[in-house]
Image (cartoon, rainbow, N blue to C red; front, side, top):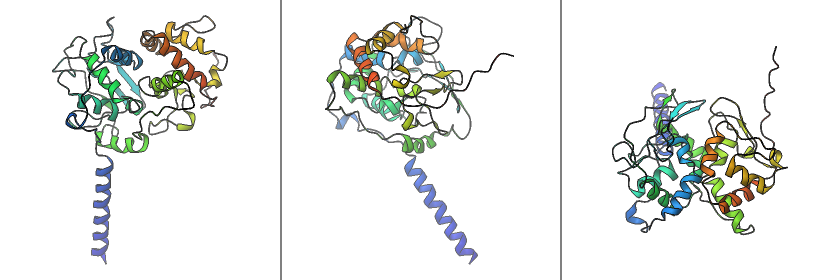
Amino acid sequence: MLQRTILVALLAAVTAAGVYWWLSAPVVAAGAATTPAHVPNLANGEVMFNAGGCASCHAVPDQPDRTRLGGGVAIKSPFGTFYAPNISSDPTYGIGKWTDADFVNAVMHGVSPDGQHYFPAFPYTSYQRARREDVLDLFAYLKTLPPVAGKVRDHDVRFPFDIRRNIGIWKFLFMDGKPFVADGTKSPQWNRGAYLVNSFGHCAECHSPRNALGGIITGERFAGGPNPEGEGWVPNITQKRLGEWSAKDIAYFLKTGELPDGDSVGGAMTRVIKNTSQLPDEDLAAIADYIKSLPPVDGPPRPKRKEAS
């Protein structure tokens, strides 16, 4: 009887290990040999660079040139601190030797060229919605920017969240792999805005509350919540809070950082505005059109401020 119990336990353990290994395996896209050749559009790549806010995380800190993508920005989270990597064209420390397939797999699937999961501090849950041709245009544009030598320090993430294989389970729970699909009942401008906001713009990544595992709470998407970096509150950008803003107000804010009441934005959003201010006016109008259409959603209750004693 004891031997039978041990055998059953061993079989159960082996089965569980097999299921874990299967669920946690990195999933990648097809390689260049099985995909059509792409002629890059550098102008579109620059638009995607600005829409994605690449410079906000990957530009070398404390220097003015947003095209020096040597990385190093610290990204705090409840799970530890991540450090944005070097994505410059440097062949040793950056992505200078990457192939098109390497870049697509990194951006859209969160998998490194050596087959490891990237941590979801890299917002590939949004980038998975991007079109492959836009991702390749972005890659082509990045390769025109200056190489920056230097390796970024390792992430500081506590156990067990530092085990990359576990990210495969996280992806299984929170990443569906679905591309953006245009809504035929909406205008081309609205669809352009929906695409930019939900793919490269990754607005929901900051403007949505998250559960204990770090996944976005679907029913409160765009409804704001605690700053994942631990300080302050990220605002609700549905009509619950922006009901009095017009689409023109939103577009002007993304262009200048100025609020409808004449005040200016502060905090991490200033980095975002540096990127969105570079977007074409028609894209700002499209983003504004989409955000203005978001129905009001109640987010998590904001803590009351402590009164000074």
